Amino acid sequence: MTKYNWLIKDVRQIQGVIREAVRVATGGRPGPVLVDIPKDIQTARTEYNPQAPVRGPLPAVRQMPEPDAKAIEKLIEAMERAERPVILAGAGIIKAGASAELAQFARHAQIPVINTLLGMGGFPGTDPLFLGMPGMHGTAYANFALCECDLLINLGARFDDRVTGKVSSFCLKAVIVHVDIDAAEIGKRVKTHIPILGNVRDVLRSLNQQVRPVERRAWIGQVEAWKRDYPLQYGWDGSVKPQYVIEQIQEITGGDALFATGVGQHQMWAAQFLRFNEPRAFVSSGGLGTMGFGLPASIGAKFGRPDKEVWLIDGDGSFAMTLVELATAAMYNVPVRAVILNNAFLGMVRQWQELFFGKRYSHSHYPTNPDFAKIAEGYGVKGFSVRDVDQVRSVLEQAADHDGPVVMDFHVNPEENVWPMVPAGAGNDEMQLAPPAPESAR
Amino acid sequence: MRQIYSILVNNHPGVLSHVAGLFTRRGYNIESIAAGPTEDSEVTRISIVAFGEQHELEQIAKQLRKLYDVRDVQQVSYTRSVTRELLLATIMAGPEKRGEVFQLANAFGANVVSIADDSVTLEASGNDQKIRTLLKSFERYGIAQVARTGMIALPYSGMPSDWEPLA
Image (cartoon, rainbow over all chains, first blue to last red; front, side):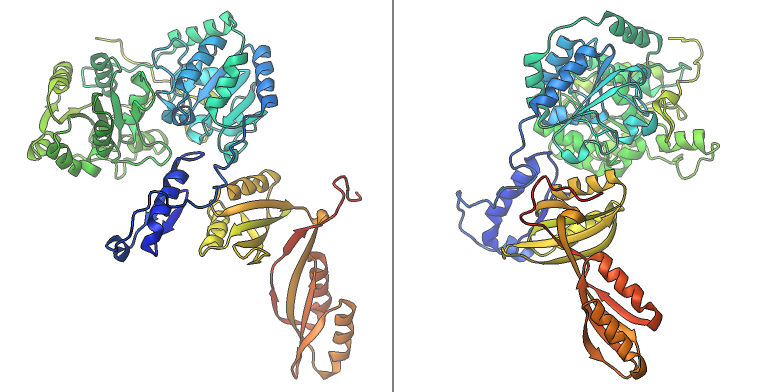
């Protein structure tokens, strides 16, 4: 789990270890560390020395090499030859603070950008070059672009299995470029033709100095056509559709807010239907998929960025796991807007049971869910319960204006699925689109 | 294929378990592991023999380099290094067979370290091939018990950088 951990046995070690721990956690590819401070050390006394020495250099951060100029040259040559290039931008862009560099690069070289789940916000969601998320619940046009591209430029993403689908059918027509700060990620899952080890911001700055502006009318036109012909969509049957709730949140906020999520269907819909304007606007648990992450994360986000409005988009399953944190929100009057897309199911589990296990719903149905609005009121937090689609907008607007924490329990269509979907173990070329929806009655 | 990793690590408690844990967690197979002090008291050398596909072996080295306490990882090639292993083996041999066993041991440069009524315990060192051949040669007497240290390795010093092994 952690990059390293320390057990403090002598109180005099504490300053050096804490300094070192911060350096390890933030250096190279950032990650958590653990410092274990036993009870007797916690209560011991020591002198504070601001100049306490830090131990020797850390292999993973020491001398991060300058990006290899020859490899960058190769990438530029590949870009000049390419007719259908695509950028896959991961969380590395956000961690390196390279969003501005990425936007400049993509616009200058006219290359469409796909953001991984944790890369969301690294490229503006409103930019015409933005293609959304790839892979299992990615947009159709992102997956089409991956299947058809002749050059894939991976900037700080790790080729997660939810992105690649079956590796043996991933980006078969493409020259693959992988820029990463962690040598162990390059070539780990996908064979890389042009590896570039380094900080993605340094690489992008170097590229931005060298790349010549081009027009790619045919390819951009093709991508636009896919976006037009295969948009994200959902059916309309008079019930409260979870995607509709998220669309309304997008309209009300204009995307100018921080959004936290739990894990599951609602998380995928949030990634699909929200348009993130800036890095770190999307606070979500990716690889580890930690249900219950959302509420505490949204409270933390508000403390970290008090200037931003903070919305939580959660599922009933995830919300139930950590809802005691409502006490914290109430105690400090933290104005987070918690939206529960309540389908009385562990929705993603149910979706898999429906599609791959003959609808044998096992341990995924929660018909006796509590009344979350009442629970909120019990904590002294404003609560709404919504069953009527006509109330969605007005409740969201009331919540947006409320000075303090709010919980909105939206009883959504219980068997709504996340589309498109690439079945587990299948290639992105085997993506299934949403089944044809009944005529829109909106 | 097999690969020897010669790994220099900080001499701290728990480091060996970090290194070994990396192999277990990621499902790589260790054939042998040997650790001991080096010329620098703060540094321990761990020699690991592992096997896997080429890309797995590369991945192991990269993952090892990410560990905080790992200072250096060398993927040592058999043809460019000295490799040795120490073997203790108890061979079933009563008084009438001892002569044969001694002779065979002598051929391998193995020493007799203990003699009992019905067995002889030998000590031998050598590279992987020698130890395997030796064990095979004694199989017909019956081998009661074996202890091996696992392979340790050092790159050849003074070998010309353009040296190529014979095909």
